[in-house]
Image (cartoon, rainbow, N blue to C red; front, side, top):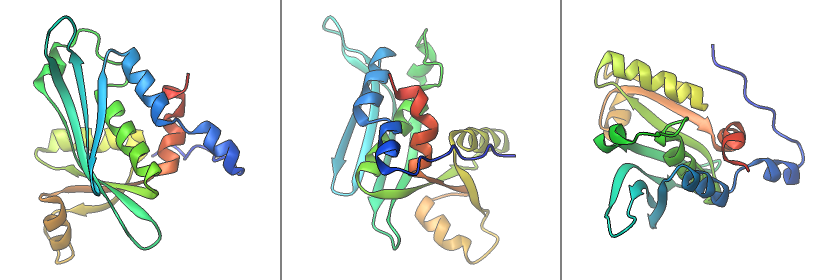
Length: 188
């Protein structure tokens, strides 16, 4: 059973004080020795995390998240298309406690919040049953809820298959609730 959503302060000023800013997230990532960058082109975005680059060495990309902000009735939606970690993350001796994915996700979610998104959506891809189960558990712990199982068995799955490019579990989350839930991790 999923944990209940964290309480939301009723006062908008109090809510804003709870939410981590992009600067808060960047400071926390730098404290872990990560160089996280957000780049945008129109509605599309890419978040990259790298390590190294000191003393003439080239930075090594550890992971990236990609997606887009799309208009939707009722508020813009943050479409999280992919989050990928490179094999280089296995060589990082002091990997962050919450993992690199939380930093990539937090920058993407904060970008969506700043762009006016109210909801984030993703597909926990079903490449293998074991990996799929781990992804669903991870995203559930992060604050996402299952919306639909995309398995290709119905005509309604056709749109999901075209948009996401695969089978898996469609999951959504309220962006403000994600930021509130993650706030302790990123606030100093």
